[in-house]
Amino acid sequence: MKKTLFIGALFSTLILSACTEEELADFFGGEDKEITVSGKTSNTSAMAEPEVSIEGVYVSPGDASNPTDTSDSSGDFSLQLNENQSFYLRASKSSFVSISSRQMSLSSDEADIDIEMPAETEAQDIINAAFITAPQLFNHAWLVVDVVTTTDDEANGYEVALSAVPSGAVYTTCNGTDSGLSETTDAPCTSDRSAPMFITYYDTAGEVIVSVGDESQTASIRMGEITSLEFVLP
Image (cartoon, rainbow, N blue to C red; front, side, top):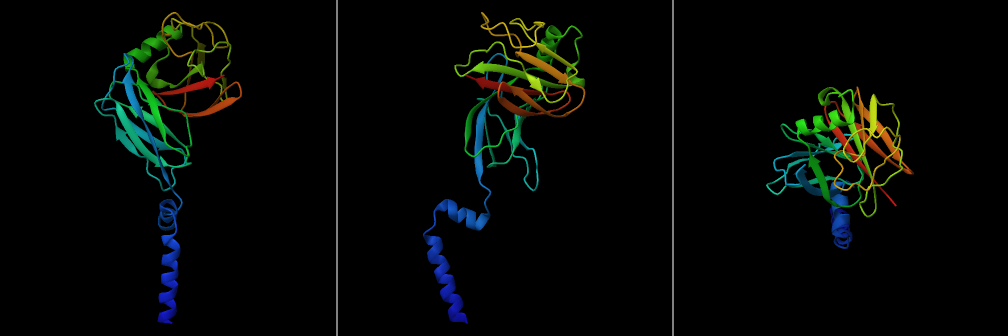
């Protein structure tokens, strides 16, 4: 019996020695693999914003813990997340508005993610310009959308469809005021647009499916925070 066990163990060793590193990792550690998500945090003056807390928030946590990092003096951050597991990025820092990304599930590394952090006062100024009623940042859940082409130019004439009816919504002009229209407009602007192309808010937190053309994204919205989406269309 001992001889049989020894031969069986030797045979297993020979099989494992022919495996790739990835296959060996799967054999000993299961099928969960990690991908790297990295990028930069900046402020609205396009300068690096350090000490921003970045969290990869798993949509269905299970046994996984949310990875975190803090952007360095150059604004750089890097997270390791589980491959093919839905998550979104959340960035926060004192006196700045917390920003969340769309929900995503990745099978490979994602780099060059840019997160722009508006100060709380800056965000409220944008809201005041866009909405006559001047809703307050802190007691609503905010969602903003930009629609651009593959050359990163703003795209006109697109309706933003939402799976849940918001409390308020505005398509902005170049100076950030309400265009009064029901689609993106006013591009190209002679200078940078003063606000996102579409701004909406809800009175409760939750999930919203956002569609532009044939593309859809899912947003997790939180009270007093902003979820920012960008649609890149031909």
